[in-house]
Length: 255
Image (cartoon, rainbow, N blue to C red; front, side, top):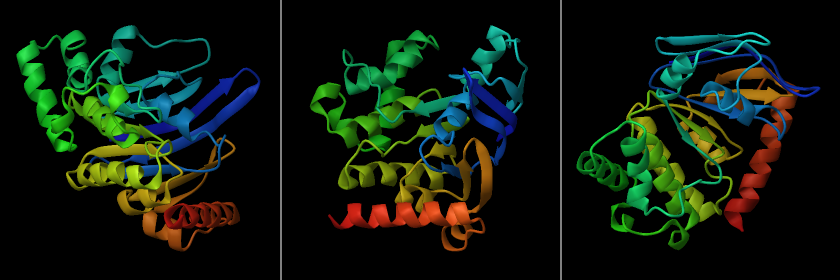
C-alpha cells in the first residue's frame, strides 16, 4: 500500500506539488494522468525519494516518513523505504556495459549482496517472465526500445519490491513496441503487483489501472475508477484532457 499525504515540492520559486493526497491499495494499479508540467513525474519520484518532498508524508506498508522544510529523514529510513520500491524510467537507463542478464543481476549482487549464482537464477527467471530470456547475453545497444524497457522492468522487479513505480514507461516507444510493454505490465497487474504509474498512454491507463488520478498544476483535480474517469469525468479540465489524449492515441494507433 502507498499513502501520500499533503505532498509539497518546490523547485526554486516554482511550487510543483501543492499538497497532494494519493492512496494506492495493495495489489492494485493507479495511473497518474495530466498535462505536461502537472507534477506527475515529480510525485512519482517523491515516492522513492529521488526527490525529497518539502512537506507531507510518504507511507509504504509499515514505513512512514514525514517531511518538513529544512529537515532531512535519517539515511537508514530512506534506504528502508527505497528497498520497498522498484523504478521503471521513461528512458530505460540500462547500464550500457552490462548485458541484459548483467543489468538484472547488478542490484542483487552489489546492493543486496547476493551470491552471483543465486542472482543469475533470479535474473534469468525474471527475463523469462518478461519474454527476454533469449536475449540474456545481448548488450542494450543491440536491443529495441521495447526490449530494453522489458529488461528494465525485470531489473526493477529483481529485489521483489512491494511497489513498482513506472514513469511514462511507454512514451519513448512507437505504438507496436509500446504494446509489448503494456502486455508485460498487464500480466504483472493480473498477478497483483502494486503499481503507481505516470503516463500519457491511454491504452496503458485504461486497460491496466484500477484507479486514475488526474493532476493539473500540482493539484489533484479528480480521481476515481478507470472506467468512471475515462467514460464520465466530472471536471471540465479532466474531460478536455481525456478528449485530447484519446484523439492523439487514435491517430497514433491508425498511422
